[in-house]
Image 1 (cartoon, rainbow, N blue to C red):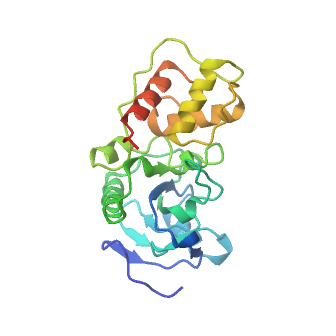
Image 2: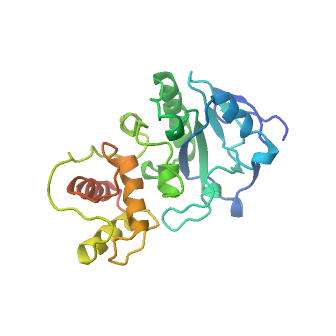
Length: 252
Protein backbone atom coordinates (compact mmCIF):
# COMPACT_ATOMS: atom_id res chain seq x y z
CA UNK A 1 0.00 0.00 0.00
CA UNK A 2 1.20 3.48 -0.80
CA UNK A 3 1.26 6.26 1.78
CA UNK A 4 -2.07 8.03 2.22
CA UNK A 5 -3.26 11.12 4.03
CA UNK A 6 -4.43 10.37 7.60
CA UNK A 7 -8.14 10.72 8.33
CA UNK A 8 -7.37 11.68 11.93
CA UNK A 9 -5.16 14.80 12.02
CA UNK A 10 -3.14 13.55 14.98
CA UNK A 11 -2.09 10.29 13.35
CA UNK A 12 1.11 9.31 11.62
CA UNK A 13 0.72 6.98 8.64
CA UNK A 14 2.20 3.46 8.73
CA UNK A 15 0.48 1.50 5.95
CA UNK A 16 -0.58 -2.13 6.32
CA UNK A 17 -1.06 -4.33 3.25
CA UNK A 18 -3.96 -6.13 4.93
CA UNK A 19 -7.17 -4.46 3.75
CA UNK A 20 -9.85 -4.58 1.10
CA UNK A 21 -12.99 -2.82 -0.07
CA UNK A 22 -15.99 -2.34 2.18
CA UNK A 23 -18.93 -4.44 0.95
CA UNK A 24 -21.40 -2.58 -1.25
CA UNK A 25 -19.40 0.60 -0.76
CA UNK A 26 -20.90 1.13 2.68
CA UNK A 27 -19.65 3.77 5.07
CA UNK A 28 -18.56 2.80 8.60
CA UNK A 29 -21.15 3.21 11.33
CA UNK A 30 -19.40 1.33 14.15
CA UNK A 31 -16.17 1.59 16.14
CA UNK A 32 -14.65 -1.63 17.48
CA UNK A 33 -12.03 -1.34 20.24
CA UNK A 34 -9.37 -4.00 20.77
CA UNK A 35 -6.28 -4.57 22.85
CA UNK A 36 -3.24 -5.98 21.07
CA UNK A 37 -2.69 -8.86 23.51
CA UNK A 38 1.02 -9.11 22.68
CA UNK A 39 4.01 -8.59 25.00
CA UNK A 40 5.16 -5.34 23.37
CA UNK A 41 3.54 -2.53 21.44
CA UNK A 42 6.35 -2.63 18.89
CA UNK A 43 5.81 -6.32 18.21
CA UNK A 44 2.07 -5.84 17.74
CA UNK A 45 2.56 -2.79 15.53
CA UNK A 46 4.96 -4.74 13.31
CA UNK A 47 2.64 -7.77 13.13
CA UNK A 48 -0.34 -5.71 11.94
CA UNK A 49 1.77 -4.49 9.01
CA UNK A 50 3.06 -7.89 7.87
CA UNK A 51 1.36 -9.60 4.92
CA UNK A 52 1.60 -13.02 6.57
CA UNK A 53 -0.38 -11.90 9.61
CA UNK A 54 -3.53 -11.30 7.55
CA UNK A 55 -4.74 -8.88 10.25
CA UNK A 56 -4.82 -5.11 10.50
CA UNK A 57 -6.71 -2.23 12.04
CA UNK A 58 -7.41 1.31 10.98
CA UNK A 59 -5.63 2.79 13.99
CA UNK A 60 -3.02 1.82 16.56
CA UNK A 61 -2.69 3.69 19.86
CA UNK A 62 0.60 3.37 21.76
CA UNK A 63 0.88 3.54 25.55
CA UNK A 64 2.28 7.07 25.40
CA UNK A 65 -0.66 8.33 23.34
CA UNK A 66 0.89 8.28 19.88
CA UNK A 67 -1.62 7.34 17.18
CA UNK A 68 -0.75 5.63 13.91
CA UNK A 69 -3.12 4.97 11.02
CA UNK A 70 -2.54 1.71 9.14
CA UNK A 71 -5.56 1.59 6.81
CA UNK A 72 -7.66 4.46 5.38
CA UNK A 73 -11.12 4.69 6.91
CA UNK A 74 -12.61 4.26 3.44
CA UNK A 75 -11.14 0.75 3.27
CA UNK A 76 -12.02 -2.48 5.08
CA UNK A 77 -9.39 -3.41 7.67
CA UNK A 78 -9.15 -6.99 8.91
CA UNK A 79 -9.65 -6.67 12.65
CA UNK A 80 -12.96 -8.18 13.78
CA UNK A 81 -12.86 -11.66 12.27
CA UNK A 82 -15.98 -13.80 12.58
CA UNK A 83 -18.38 -11.52 14.39
CA UNK A 84 -21.99 -10.38 14.77
CA UNK A 85 -23.97 -7.42 16.03
CA UNK A 86 -27.69 -6.77 15.57
CA UNK A 87 -27.89 -8.99 12.51
CA UNK A 88 -24.69 -7.63 10.95
CA UNK A 89 -22.11 -10.34 10.17
CA UNK A 90 -19.58 -8.35 8.12
CA UNK A 91 -18.40 -6.19 11.00
CA UNK A 92 -15.18 -5.34 9.17
CA UNK A 93 -17.17 -3.62 6.42
CA UNK A 94 -19.34 -1.80 8.96
CA UNK A 95 -16.66 -0.57 11.33
CA UNK A 96 -13.47 1.28 12.09
CA UNK A 97 -11.08 -0.83 14.17
CA UNK A 98 -8.78 0.61 16.82
CA UNK A 99 -5.98 -1.49 18.34
CA UNK A 100 -4.84 -0.28 21.77
CA UNK A 101 -1.38 -1.42 22.83
CA UNK A 102 -1.79 -3.56 25.95
CA UNK A 103 -0.52 -7.09 26.66
CA UNK A 104 -4.02 -8.00 27.77
CA UNK A 105 -5.03 -11.00 29.81
CA UNK A 106 -1.96 -13.04 28.72
CA UNK A 107 0.21 -10.27 30.20
CA UNK A 108 -1.76 -9.78 33.39
CA UNK A 109 -4.13 -7.14 31.99
CA UNK A 110 -2.26 -4.03 33.16
CA UNK A 111 -4.07 -0.72 33.46
CA UNK A 112 -4.31 1.45 30.36
CA UNK A 113 -2.10 4.54 30.88
CA UNK A 114 -3.93 7.89 31.14
CA UNK A 115 -2.09 9.32 28.12
CA UNK A 116 -3.21 6.37 26.04
CA UNK A 117 -6.86 6.70 27.07
CA UNK A 118 -6.74 10.45 26.44
CA UNK A 119 -5.61 9.65 22.90
CA UNK A 120 -8.34 7.02 22.45
CA UNK A 121 -10.91 9.59 23.57
CA UNK A 122 -9.66 12.19 21.07
CA UNK A 123 -9.54 9.66 18.26
CA UNK A 124 -12.97 8.21 18.96
CA UNK A 125 -14.56 11.63 19.34
CA UNK A 126 -13.17 12.66 15.95
CA UNK A 127 -14.42 9.47 14.27
CA UNK A 128 -17.85 9.69 15.93
CA UNK A 129 -18.30 13.29 14.78
CA UNK A 130 -17.12 12.73 11.22
CA UNK A 131 -19.20 9.57 10.67
CA UNK A 132 -22.16 10.36 12.97
CA UNK A 133 -21.68 7.07 14.80
CA UNK A 134 -24.38 6.27 17.36
CA UNK A 135 -23.25 5.80 20.95
CA UNK A 136 -24.54 2.21 21.10
CA UNK A 137 -22.35 1.29 18.14
CA UNK A 138 -19.05 1.94 19.91
CA UNK A 139 -18.26 -1.59 21.02
CA UNK A 140 -15.68 -4.01 22.31
CA UNK A 141 -14.23 -6.80 20.22
CA UNK A 142 -15.66 -9.08 22.92
CA UNK A 143 -19.17 -7.74 22.22
CA UNK A 144 -19.13 -8.68 18.54
CA UNK A 145 -17.08 -11.88 18.95
CA UNK A 146 -18.01 -13.16 22.43
CA UNK A 147 -16.42 -16.37 23.72
CA UNK A 148 -13.84 -16.18 20.92
CA UNK A 149 -12.47 -12.78 22.03
CA UNK A 150 -12.24 -11.01 25.41
CA UNK A 151 -10.60 -7.71 24.49
CA UNK A 152 -10.20 -4.88 25.38
CA UNK A 153 -11.07 -6.44 28.72
CA UNK A 154 -12.77 -5.57 31.96
CA UNK A 155 -10.20 -2.91 32.87
CA UNK A 156 -10.97 -0.78 29.85
CA UNK A 157 -12.47 2.51 31.13
CA UNK A 158 -15.78 2.63 29.27
CA UNK A 159 -17.18 5.05 31.87
CA UNK A 160 -14.43 7.54 31.02
CA UNK A 161 -15.34 7.37 27.34
CA UNK A 162 -19.03 7.79 28.15
CA UNK A 163 -18.22 10.90 30.17
CA UNK A 164 -16.81 12.29 26.91
CA UNK A 165 -20.03 11.34 25.04
CA UNK A 166 -18.44 8.26 23.46
CA UNK A 167 -20.28 4.96 23.75
CA UNK A 168 -23.47 3.80 25.43
CA UNK A 169 -23.27 3.43 29.19
CA UNK A 170 -25.20 3.42 32.45
CA UNK A 171 -23.63 3.10 35.87
CA UNK A 172 -23.71 -0.63 36.70
CA UNK A 173 -26.19 -1.71 39.35
CA UNK A 174 -24.45 -2.66 42.61
CA UNK A 175 -23.60 -6.29 43.12
CA UNK A 176 -25.74 -7.80 45.85
CA UNK A 177 -28.03 -10.70 46.57
CA UNK A 178 -31.23 -11.79 44.91
CA UNK A 179 -32.21 -14.37 42.36
CA UNK A 180 -29.72 -15.37 39.67
CA UNK A 181 -29.50 -17.63 36.64
CA UNK A 182 -26.57 -19.74 35.54
CA UNK A 183 -25.58 -22.45 33.11
CA UNK A 184 -27.96 -25.40 33.32
CA UNK A 185 -31.02 -23.35 34.29
CA UNK A 186 -34.09 -23.41 32.06
CA UNK A 187 -37.42 -21.67 31.78
CA UNK A 188 -39.20 -18.46 30.88
CA UNK A 189 -36.94 -16.16 32.95
CA UNK A 190 -33.89 -17.48 31.06
CA UNK A 191 -35.68 -16.91 27.76
CA UNK A 192 -36.46 -13.34 28.82
CA UNK A 193 -32.78 -12.75 29.64
CA UNK A 194 -31.72 -14.14 26.26
CA UNK A 195 -34.29 -11.98 24.50
CA UNK A 196 -32.95 -8.85 26.22
CA UNK A 197 -29.36 -9.69 25.26
CA UNK A 198 -30.45 -10.35 21.67
CA UNK A 199 -32.41 -7.09 21.58
CA UNK A 200 -29.32 -5.20 22.67
CA UNK A 201 -27.29 -6.80 19.88
CA UNK A 202 -25.65 -10.02 21.08
CA UNK A 203 -25.75 -13.24 19.04
CA UNK A 204 -27.47 -15.29 21.73
CA UNK A 205 -30.00 -18.11 21.22
CA UNK A 206 -33.48 -17.39 22.59
CA UNK A 207 -34.19 -20.92 23.70
CA UNK A 208 -35.02 -20.79 27.45
CA UNK A 209 -31.90 -22.94 28.03
CA UNK A 210 -29.01 -21.25 29.85
CA UNK A 211 -26.44 -23.01 27.68
CA UNK A 212 -22.67 -22.52 27.44
CA UNK A 213 -23.19 -19.99 24.66
CA UNK A 214 -25.56 -17.96 26.81
CA UNK A 215 -23.00 -18.00 29.60
CA UNK A 216 -20.42 -16.65 27.15
CA UNK A 217 -22.76 -13.84 26.11
CA UNK A 218 -23.40 -12.91 29.74
CA UNK A 219 -19.63 -12.82 30.35
CA UNK A 220 -19.17 -10.55 27.32
CA UNK A 221 -21.91 -8.23 28.56
CA UNK A 222 -20.38 -8.13 32.06
CA UNK A 223 -16.89 -7.48 30.70
CA UNK A 224 -18.14 -4.30 29.04
CA UNK A 225 -21.06 -3.10 31.17
CA UNK A 226 -20.66 -4.68 34.65
CA UNK A 227 -16.91 -5.30 34.90
CA UNK A 228 -16.66 -5.63 38.69
CA UNK A 229 -17.44 -9.34 38.38
CA UNK A 230 -17.15 -11.32 35.15
CA UNK A 231 -18.43 -14.80 35.91
CA UNK A 232 -21.18 -15.58 33.38
CA UNK A 233 -23.83 -15.73 36.11
CA UNK A 234 -26.86 -13.54 35.43
CA UNK A 235 -27.31 -12.05 38.86
CA UNK A 236 -29.65 -9.20 39.76
CA UNK A 237 -26.94 -6.61 39.10
CA UNK A 238 -26.31 -7.92 35.58
CA UNK A 239 -29.99 -8.15 34.68
CA UNK A 240 -30.82 -4.71 36.08
CA UNK A 241 -27.87 -3.12 34.25
CA UNK A 242 -29.00 -4.74 30.99
CA UNK A 243 -32.58 -3.59 31.53
CA UNK A 244 -31.46 -0.02 32.15
CA UNK A 245 -29.23 -0.03 29.06
CA UNK A 246 -32.17 -1.15 26.92
CA UNK A 247 -34.36 1.59 28.37
CA UNK A 248 -31.62 4.12 27.59
CA UNK A 249 -31.46 3.19 23.90
CA UNK A 250 -32.76 5.89 21.57
CA UNK A 251 -36.24 5.32 20.18
CA UNK A 252 -36.36 3.88 16.71
